[in-house]
Amino acid sequence: MKKNNLFTATRIAGATALVLALGTGSTAALAAKDKGDAVYAAKLTGFSSIPSVYTPAYGKFKAVPDKFGKYIYFEMYYDSLPGDAKSAHIHFGQKFANGGGIIATLCGGNYTKPCPTYSGWVKGKITYKDIEGPKGQGIYPGDIKSAIKVLKKGLTYINVHTSKFPKGELRGQVLPADF
Image (cartoon, rainbow, N blue to C red; front, side):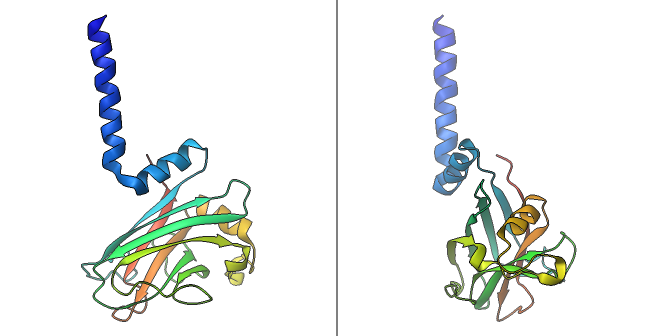
């Protein structure tokens, strides 16, 4: 009996340590997962850009769409950009495709805050007012429900544009997060 209690206590302590080690950003994602909200994420690198670029910069993106289809909460972090960040967008496009239209601007334009210059966090809530399109791909301005559908299908990517790489220095495909 004492061995079982010790084993259970060890498992609880290990699980607690794991949650603490993941940090507050990941625990927020885990909390969203516990509430039944789907979490989507992307690792941002220069190698994922099309064409690929060599850069010391890196980043991450996380999105939690509202289960009623009214908004998308997001947070993005990037660091070590050698050029000034000019804008960041969610695009509609497959992993190895280029030129997907802009769904929404995360920072650096269209009534959004400026992007942090070389590193920093961008957090916000995308609503129907923020959806730009792309009309040519079947998503019309304001169509948040279609934007959420393509996000859930893995057909969106994040692109961070800089002064050094105006076509995109960091990119990452947004996919269901695996916790």
